[in-house]
Image (cartoon, rainbow, N blue to C red; front, side, top):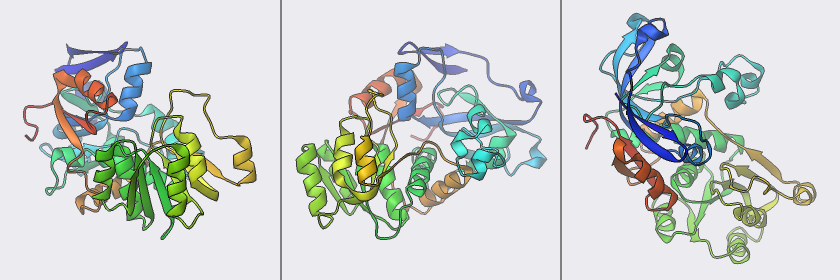
Length: 345
């Protein structure tokens, strides 16, 4: 089978052996991958992890083999969408709702990775993180289940409440998903980005307001004018720019929350101690979803409460390197890699 192997900022399409259930105690499923979304975390690994690896985890596919079939809610021929990590739900981390810190969560994964023609999916995945593709969504739309679930996890951790006001800094695909997730939790949301087209798109996706970023002082003043001079209750940092940290601090109200949902190139950049102390700010991170978050994301997409129809640009597997570069250069909002010839046109 064809597999896109990443190493040292290069992609090579290799022919490797198709996973077989006999190598996994004849338990689990083999899924033919139809398509896979390109995640920002894939790009970070591509740029900064020199080890040989197969990226991709926002998978839509078709089950071609499953054992033991009588123990599963799925069958051969089912079209499915899946999450790639499974928490144990029993350890101290899980009991405290730190699911992505669970040791089983970190050890479980699909094999070899979503940018392959076939993957192995474990019984744990089949039980907890695999869902059937609803008939009213195309493959590209439902591929957003896992990234939307990540946003739902962030919204839950930030404790978004009805009528609270959130600011989304960065309106890439995650920022646009995050804003819609905030609305699903009955919060008000303001979007902000440097790119006018993305600001306009947010305005068409049920955001309460969307503004173009000018500079930290001028734009944060606009935010305060929109919030009775208070500042927003919550800032979601979906931008990977360390310069956005100062903007977040100037835009959040005293006693407010800043949720970090992106890495930044300068890992020494951070939030000043005295701001956190004197203003009683809450700074927290959010990483990856639980099975419950995946289920809610699946439901919101199915019911069209979150719209992703116009987010993606499709690329063939052979053009994965181009898709990565186009995403880095903001030429596309979201890249979707078509793997199989059976993938929807």
